[in-house]
Image (tube, rainbow, N blue to C red; front, top):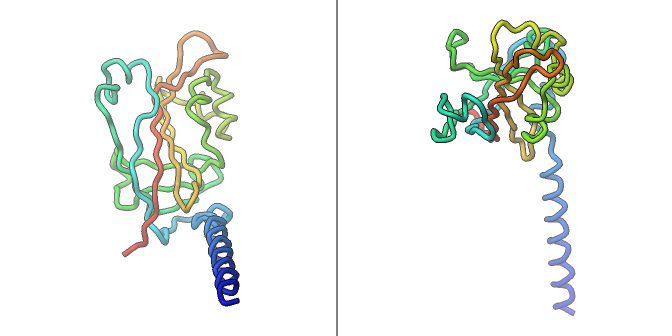
Amino acid sequence: MRMKTYIVVSLFIVQVGLACAGTTKALTHTLTPYLTNDAFGTYPLPMVWSGVQTITYQTGYFKYGGRGAMSVPEEDAIRFNQYSNLSKSWMARQMLDDSTVSNSNFLKKVYGYVPVLPPDSELIQLHDDSAFTNLFKLNVNTLRSRAFKQQTFHFYTLGNNNTIRIKELIVEELEGNSKTNIQIVLIKSGILSPKRRL
């Protein structure tokens, strides 16, 4: 009798443990309230997300001898401690960055939110500026108005277990064909993990 009671109690504890584990996985991401709030402003985050992004795809100049070539592994340390929502424009809403880096510093990277980060295999098939714009729900003129042959984009999305997934893309304009006039020449990807502020 005592053995049966022990087995029943043990099974109950295991089931409760599994239920708690399931609840932990279902917890809301810390950034969800920020993304659902339309109020403009800049806000310090309750946690600091940090990690590295590494090159996951490169071609052209970047692959054959340029900065970030395959022969030169490159990692960027990324840190987010601040959220900004400054306008309805994509380039100024739902942004994450590091407040300790000066806005005038050319190394400062500001990332804009997207619900889904497409895989590299899908991104490198893009050769049309409108397809790129539609994929990331950017402003219509984001690519067409650029003054340079290359433009850099930074995106983030919410990951599992309160992480943040990020991608940096360098998009290059191709000459001649107005319908198929871009290619992705560099992709960096990473996952940032949260830590409590001290």
